[in-house]
Length: 256
Image (cartoon, rainbow, N blue to C red):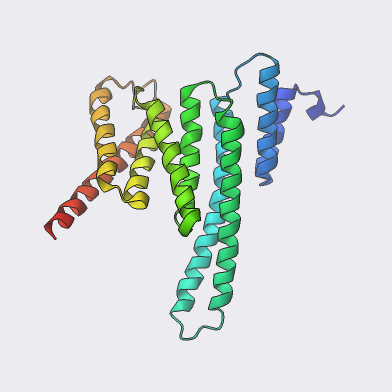
């Protein structure tokens, strides 16, 4: 019997999930996590993944999608270069290649969104866990709006909007001094401002978040949250900078 076969099923699934991640085989990595969820259910335990497991799964999804986004950005750079050339003989081929990458990226994001809906959100028992997956769903569909047009973009925008809003509703009465909740508010406000064009709503989300921060920051236990402190303060700083920038843009727009 091999060392891996001798391990309990839980440890074996985690080990194989890590191996699949290192091999960039993210769909197989997810299947090992599905087995973990089913195993917990059989044993009468919580079906929620542990925070470290959840982070590993999300990292796999994000790495997979970001690698394809990187490919798309490189292709777009070459497209921009060729557009500057008079009567470029290769531009049409680049455009076809770009459409191929976009199609693959959209399909993969939709596949992941289906996985998040059918397994992760469905089996989540804690609100914070549901918020985590809803934010991920919102972020991925926001990526689609960066390059798609027409009905595909509209659908992705609607999915992102609902996912973000559902997450915000669940987080409404929670302590905002949390890296997940701050990241959610930051991304949702950016989405409202840059994708939907609801600038006042974006500023309202940022203002409400920062008002909560002002109230809760004096009671924030830095020692207890030492690991997340730097990330939390960075998210707050980004929110403040965005709000300042948006207010300046709004003032300039009102002068026209």
